[in-house]
Amino acid sequence: MNRIAKTNMLIAAASLPLLASCGGGASEPEPVDEAAVTARSAPVAQEFQQKLKTQLVAALTNGGPDSAVSVCSQVAPAIAAAASGESGAEVSRIARKHRNPGAGVPAAMGSHYDALAAQPLSDGKPAVRIWRSGEDDDARIHYLSAIPMQDQPCSVCHGTAVDPALKQHIESLYPGDLATGFKPGDLRGAMLISWQADIFQ
Image 1 (cartoon, rainbow, N blue to C red):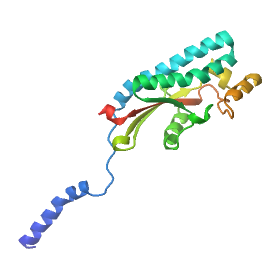
Image 2: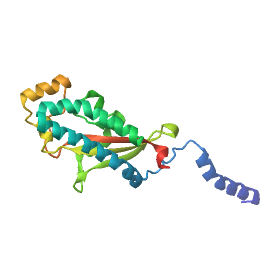
Image 3: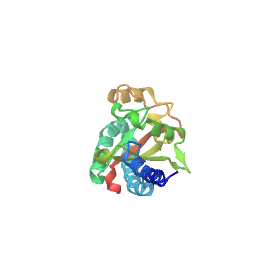
Image 4: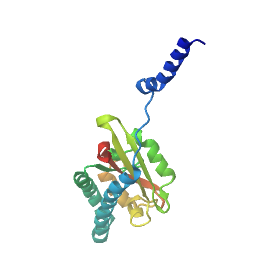
């Protein structure tokens, strides 16, 4: 091989990495700092759950299950809106078997929700999924935390033996309700905390 041919081969080999970086190949997704996402998201999810539980227990104690369902229908959206405003994230609850149709599982999140359904608890705590979606200005980081079914007080309104009169009241507030029939340990739903990705840069 003469000197010119050998030089051309060296130039071509050196150009490959540059061509690969400039070409149309799929770029690797940016890594997600799960510790940072958890540190910021877990308190938001926990505070939401605690505020809602406090009001539901009070309603159950003072007015019974009908009152608790009525209170939940009013205060849960308000707590979510307040948590969103205070944190800067989008805070909501989603579920396959939902009470409110607006709280269904988005198709793009289905695999993450199903993973929680398969294992709602991890080391005795609600399981979590963290991932990135979108690109550039639309990029978001999602924190999805399982809400496992608890025996009390959840089973009164969500369990396998909901009183027929209570079920009728539930359906008067939530036509087409799907959120009953759960056993302790089942995935009843999940807390969804979604952030703009640039917050964690």
